[in-house]
Length: 243
Ligand SMILES: [Zn+2]
Image 1: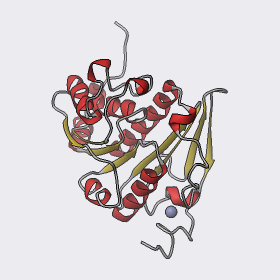
Image 2: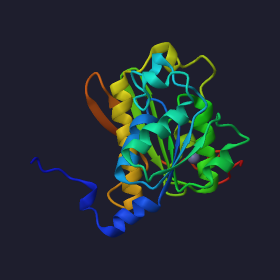
Image 3: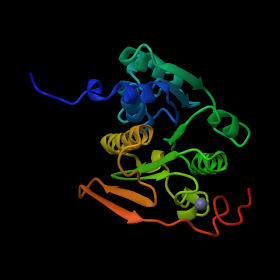
Image 4: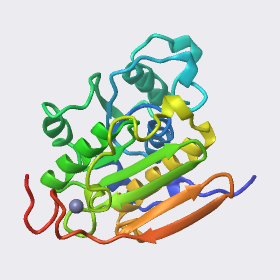
């Protein structure tokens, strides 16, 4: 037998922490897939998944939650089917909708931790702002081509996304995932980092990526960490927030 670490090596208290936690994953695509797989396999008891798209053949190289047998099916539906096969006891609340100003506050309020696994700036800023307002931990990440980045946002304890990137880039200034593509395995690397951060927060272990931006370069196979500070002029978490 090959020895390996398993969930059985956690204490009963730690297992209970995982089982009773509620984690929202915004996006069931390239990042959301590995995040959802590992959180479900780790024994997280309650997941929420937000996604308004259907399974598309062109995305399956990175959206590994889904199968060719689910083409055209809502991604949240496909995700539940797959995740229940890993852990039939996981409770999954689905939101087959696009994150918007009108629904973001209500959607995130029932969860302890939010994972940003989206592919567009508007959803990224919406989830950041809503999590800061509701004081919820947010695991933020993005991927493009061979690169990715991750940071963990604990409101009041470190910078938020807007502290580092105050406003979205102008439309068309940054190519979209569809235009430039993403190596599926890079989304896997970054999604696994996000899942690890979630589990660390729930178990209160280690040092989360708070005040640190982890940058991954897949071509050179380098991880670097850049320090980041809270911006006192941040419009969301600064000394005089606008919200
Ligand atoms: Zn901020």
